[in-house]
Structures are given as structure tokens and as C-alpha cells.
Amino acid sequence: MTTDPAPENEQPSEQALLDELRGDLDRFKDLAMRSAADLENYRKRASREKEDAVKYANAAFLERLVPILDNFELGMAAAKSESGAAAIVAGLEMVARQIQDFLTACGVEAVNAEPGTLFDPNVHEAIGQHAHAEIADGAVIQQMRKGFKLRDRLLRPATVLISKGKAS
Image 1 (cartoon, one colour):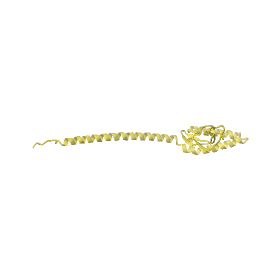
Image 2: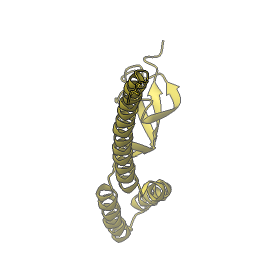
Image 3: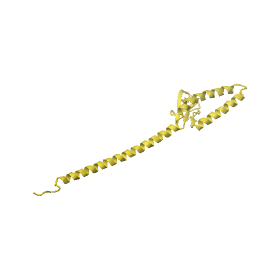
Image 4: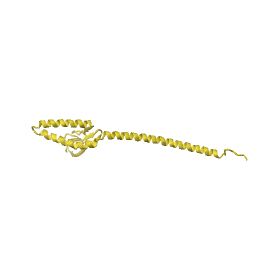
């Protein structure tokens, strides 16, 4: 009887075990790379969301300020129509400039809704359509209420009347 230190049937099982371990190693390397990529994507997304939160933090405040600005402008128009209110009008105009400077510093800009501007449903809200001899079909006839944007986001659309072309 001869004793063989390593039987022949054990060698393939060691090779199979080695192949299995290499497969596991490859899977774990792939998993580690995917996890690292997911973490990096999460960090980038969180950074973008933080920047947006800072950039648009005042949006709710400014949305509530816009109707007050409308009423202020109505008050200015009424004061201008009164005779002998030149001092009041001058004071209101100074306040209006300060408000405009404040809004500009916050990144707020008015939406363009001048007569003749083409109607854009992304920034305009049409409340009516009338025939107009001079203004082309689909263009703004009159702005009823100002619209405002905060950087690239719309705070409030401009409310407008639009033309449906010449009356027939």
C-alpha cells in the first residue's frame, strides 16, 4: 500500500475554489466601484440641491411681496392723478426705486409683456383675446398685471390680453 499525500481528486476542487474566489473578487470589485460611483453621484446631486435651495430660498417671500408691489404701484398712480401731490409722488418714486433695486439685487426681474410682444404661455397668462387692427395675431395687446421671474424660475406670469388679428 502506497500512501499518496495529495489524491488526484482534490486538485480540481482547489482550482474550482480558486476560480470561485476570483469570481467573488471580481464581483466585489464591481460592487465597490458602483458604490463609489453612486456615492459620488449622490454628493453631486446634494451639492446641486443645496445650491438651488440657497439660490431660491427667498422665492416664497418674494411671491408674497409681489401683490404688495402691485398695490404700491396702484397707489402711486392714484397719487400722480391728484393735483398738489407732487411731494408725495416724489417720495413714492424714491421708495419705488428702492424696491426695484432690492428686487434686482435678489435676482427678480419683470416679465416682458409689452404690446406687440408675442404671447409666450411659459411666462404669460392670457385672460382675453380681442381683435386689433395694428397688433398681429397672437401678440400681446395689453398687460393687465406684471409678471416676475426669480432668476430662471417664474414667480408669477404676466396677465395679458392678446390679439386675434384684424376684425373682419
